[in-house]
Length: 298
Image 1 (tube, rainbow, N blue to C red):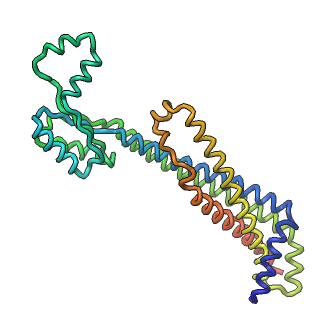
Image 2: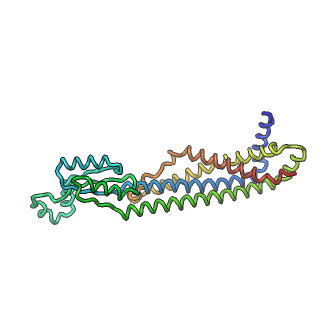
């Protein structure tokens, strides 16, 4: 195909958007709503994953030791070298004892009369992979000088189960939304093509090839999809920022749930725009081309 013919078809495709503005607007609205729903669900899924990750990081194994400073340093070194450890925090027994006295002021005089500090040194270990919590605890118990290890088995299993369930549910919801979007977009495209079947038939009767007929419709679909992608990106940004602002009104409550770590839209803004435009143009153009098949058989 010659270049001037191609540019002519591109101009015709863009002109058709305005010429058939009612059907174009209907297709635009369908794509806009579809992309907005998919985008918001994806952002929600990403943030749920971030929140679960934050909660997982608060899930710690606690080890205790009654050794001297040399032994405590050796234990600390072993814990840091473990493949299971994400972060290790040490609390000296004197600090623990002072905290205990502060929490029980009524018996402060009794505690002060005691000659020895009965509290152990404490090690808070964040495990990088919750599925390996039991293996990590078993390894920590084998470290010389460690007298006891507390493991939050039930909480770890709950988090693992929650992450698996939410991943499956989120994936199913996204797939269902995409399937519904494809059906709606395809039906909208069929209606658009059907309303212009006479135009297609005339072009075929005067000798136009299938490619010559398809290209303007393809360009039209891409243009509508591109506009819908940009518009859905703007609405997604506005909706998402509104929700984030609402969460930020009560810092104490949401900080307890780890919601201060939510993904900032600015950090993924251009990625969301690119994905919206690519998906929008692909769905719209493909839907129109697929709907033209029987009308090209003249």
